[in-house]
Amino acid sequence: MFTGLVEELGKVKNIARGAKSVRLTVSGHKVLEDVKLGDSIAVNGTCLTVVDFSRDWFTADVMPETVDRTALAGLKPGDTVNLERTLRVGDRLGGHIVSGHIDGVGTILAKEQNDNAVIVRIGAGPEVMRYIIQKGSIAIDGTSLTVVDFGPDWFTVSLIPHTATMTTVGLKATGQPVNLEADIIGKYVEKLLGFSQAAQPAEKITLRFLEQHGFTL
Image: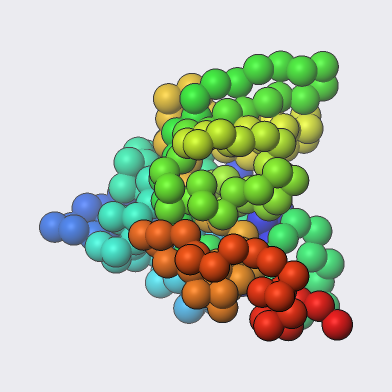
């Protein structure tokens, strides 16, 4: 489990490609201070398991399922990636609950300077947009951000200068892919209320509906 607060930027040192898998070696410093074999590190928001490490690098295997669902397969040696260690019990939850399980790959559509902020527009598919709400949380390459606005297949976030310079969201250019993870709370609410991916619920949201499902006292 992660918080979406990127600890440092790492560099891809090597990518060994299998038939459908990838073995990724990434340089880092802060995330390796207390690393052990089997630990989890989020790389661009994707939870990966450390299978080998040294003082300034670690290696993780990326299985075919993860290759298919994330933008990790498109990385090249020298690329910059966001890195975060797992949340420890008792730590401050400065971002939001991030599982490290990617829902879809989006694309940076535009960037616009707005005084000290950078407004980033992200294009995304229905597997992500169904959970997007105004002022809701979204993890972009593992960075916890707040949705400013959204449309049918896009949403925007606003980056403060620190986020713009210390994460891949600020460093990537228009047209580049980003890993997206929607707020996990929305997924559980959807599941509990019986929403399907193919259709909207047949019953309208009424006071009676809320009473029947325990949302009123």
